[in-house]
Length: 345
Image (tube, rainbow, N blue to C red; front, side):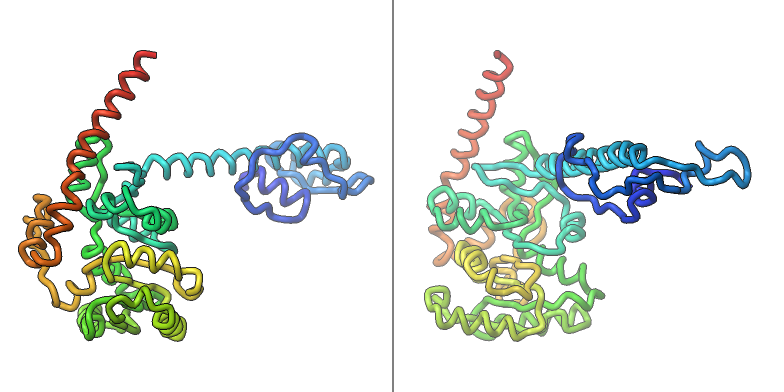
């Protein structure tokens, strides 16, 4: 059997050392006060120390045990620290910043594998523009554990800025993919919050029929402006707490859904995953049409939605979001200037 540092510590001290995210210890920090004063008899690994079959156990003093323990413990802790730093730096490299918003650079399959707990937001052009001027939205966004790219336009912008994002994972794609991914996982139980009256219930029925089990355990369509009514919010929270759900899907539009999740998530200890998915509940219920795949790939889904709901969306797309293109050009120029300055130093 291979004789590792952890095995050695276990043999000497009689316990298994749990890896912890701490820095390597100094000599003084690893001194042991509880070792026996008298020599102890331990069986050392046979490969380097045995002198033939049936060799007698060797006598090892407490001082030698201390030296061994310090060496092995330090090696194990330093290895753990290096691994943590490696993972952290790798994670940081997997985020792309656009207009001061860090977006996870990850494929859909990897994201679904990693998503065990946390708050998930899906930034798009409209989100990024709102984040430039709404501090409450910024505060809510800072509480998200995952921010996955919701827009083909953002995908194109990331390439223009020289840091391409791997995949578009819009809320309208994420929700059905999440349900399909957990088709046979009985531990996943979803509560849907959103849509006009009856829409959430219809989405629940259609999703459960498609998945083949009751993956959506409850659905509720809140009244218009519910987020301003604390009594109604508390009733909704109690409804969620009384349900068996451990995933909450909220689709009431941005920035309302993100702010609501950020405000109330700590009052829902039974919920492991929070998904803010925009119009996905309407799409799942068949209440609104989704853009054809080709239109979406060309980055023209916004135009399709504008044509579908011009009265509701004209201001968003033609007024509020229009400065996005200029801001991206400015960011490209700023990055290029910064690169030139750095290279000239």
